[in-house]
Structure formats: structure tokens, C-alpha cells
Image (cartoon, rainbow, N blue to C red):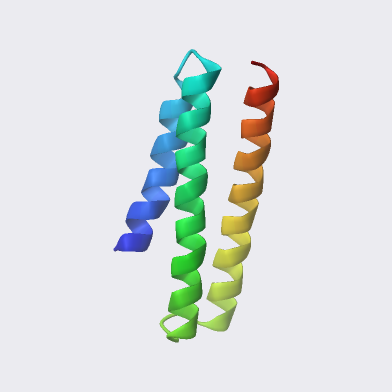
Length: 83
């Protein structure tokens, strides 16, 4: 349940940030999305350690989280450069 909430937070903050006019506002929402992505990584790690998900699923989800994190970092850099 908590993982779903964190993942939804990522999506919602990206969507809300993209609708903001100022770079400062966009950066705030994208930073929150990035924080939520990091929460997802830690929860996936915990699920893997507890054997609640398979090793293959753990690896796939961690890779996906890191890819999203990387994209968000680049997005923030782009917005920050446009300031």
C-alpha cells in the first residue's frame, strides 16, 4: 500500500509540476517526485529482503526506480538551467 502511494506521488508531482509557470514551483514539485522515487527504492529493497517479491521482480523494480530517478534529475537540471 505504501509503495503504491509513493509511486502515485511520483506521477502526481510530475504532473502538477509540469503545469506550473515558474521554474521555482516546477523544481519544488520535481524534487518531491524525486524524493518519492527514492522512497520506492527503499520499499522495493525491503520487499526483496523479506522475500515478498522475487529477486527478478526486485531487480526489475529497482532498475525502473533508478531510471525514473535519473530522468527526474535531468528534468530538474533542465528546468534549473532555464531559470
